[in-house]
Length: 198
Image (tube, rainbow, N blue to C red; front, side, top):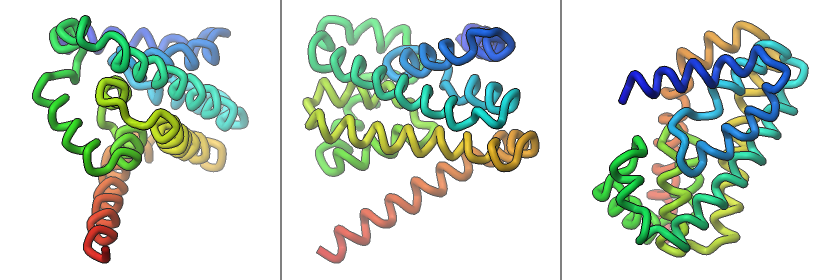
């Protein structure tokens, strides 16, 4: 499985060297939000590195593609999950029946913030888009959380390249997971504080 994912990763990266990099980014962001295993950050970083001045345009394409793909994932969960769940559990990396049950527990307590955390951090976003539909999370809440979290994630990456250029690549590759996990820890801390104050 890891060899397949690595080949997909290399294939995604190769699109940055073609004239079709921007449409490929939109398609990748759309697909990753519902079933594809490689995150759009790979191609986004490559495109921003190639043309830093267009970084924000690339981020917008990734955001809109990802949210649209999230809506597809929501539709899969809402409409046909019972019929096709076995396929996802067996063939799509990151999906498991146990993980899906844990997601439901999170949704029961923090619907907006659960989607937000999945959209912003390295957690597989597609699990949460499909789970949102399967557990019938409020659709406007889902779209709002997706738009804010995916936009924040992609525009932060784009901003680093726009202002820093090539050194941003080293920074992101070295610290991205750490920074997003730190942000998630702060978010959970804030939620616990709010709960305690109430």
